Amino acid sequence: MDYSWKFDNHELYLINILWLFVIISYINLFSVRPINNVAYFNKYLAMLNSTTITGLLIFTTVSYAGYKLYKKAWGNPPLNKYDDKDQIASIPGHCLFCKIIHTNKEPFYRDDKVVAFYDKYPIGRIHIQIVPLRHIKNVWHLKRSDIELIEHMRQVGERLLRNIDPNGEYVFGFHHPLCNSIPHLHMHAIVLPLKSWSGKVEISKPIFITPEKVIAKLAPKEKIN
Image (tube, rainbow, N blue to C red; front, side, top):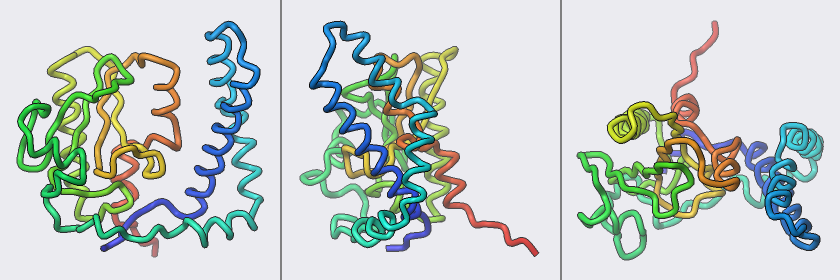
């Protein structure tokens, strides 16, 4: 497998520490859960403000020993036999999205590269998944030659949302591989507003990665003379 792009180890380490912080905070809040649910969720969201995240990033940045340990344990995840760079969606028994691709029930759009269907658990007023026919596990497994595919996914997503809601405000992006629920590349195309507080977390940085950032990572870097 050609790894032309993936997050660097330090970035992965910071993301995991951030998630650990959120999970621990969530558990702690449950132990003293207030009667007012709105106040409870507002307190949870407040823990994700820029000051908290900045402080956490500073702490983990200087924790070089932790970073080195993380690099050895998680920095270079092994390639799964499930991933084949040339494999077309032909394993419906093992991949939910491959199974959907092989049906005509859920996808309402299909071309020679992608299908589109409505998310089963929408976080926005409208929530569509744009999924490539070729089985690619996640953004870590993209190659430079896949830039055209990402651009196409972005274009299809915007075109479909504009047909559904011409005046809407849109969000497009991929979840970080460590936060993926389905091991098949998919781009979220969402019409705002979000339905709940959890949606704000799901499309926040660094969990949510825009197509533009993915393309920037894949694109060849210009040499400075």
